[in-house]
Image (tube, rainbow, N blue to C red):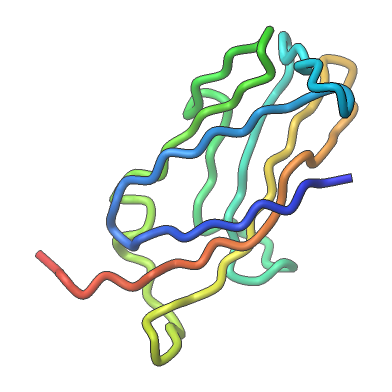
Amino acid sequence: MSVIANFDLDQGATKHLTFTLHTDSGGTPLDLTGYDVRLYVKRFRDQEAALISKEAVDMDITPASGIIELSFDPADTADLVFGFDADGKQSLYYDLEIESPGGVVRRPFRGTITLLRNVTVE
């Protein structure tokens, strides 16, 4: 079952995230050695193409500790333009997938990203 973790992301800014995976409620870290890790961001849940894709090569992974760190860079969101609401917000959806060396896929984290529109444009 996925943990729902929602966060805000300022358009055109840098955002660092850390996800820690455990094997049990006691906090035993999941050893991520040999795992493939990916995170996709979409405007709609059933959208085929991701707006933003992060693969294992884009992340800092500490396998023995079950820690995944990634960053959204300014270029990831700078050009995203679509239906922001009156407050300059747009909801996006993401999930973090891990695939074991044996091919078992899990989604330990998922949620919404509130993209906050940038008003300072260079």
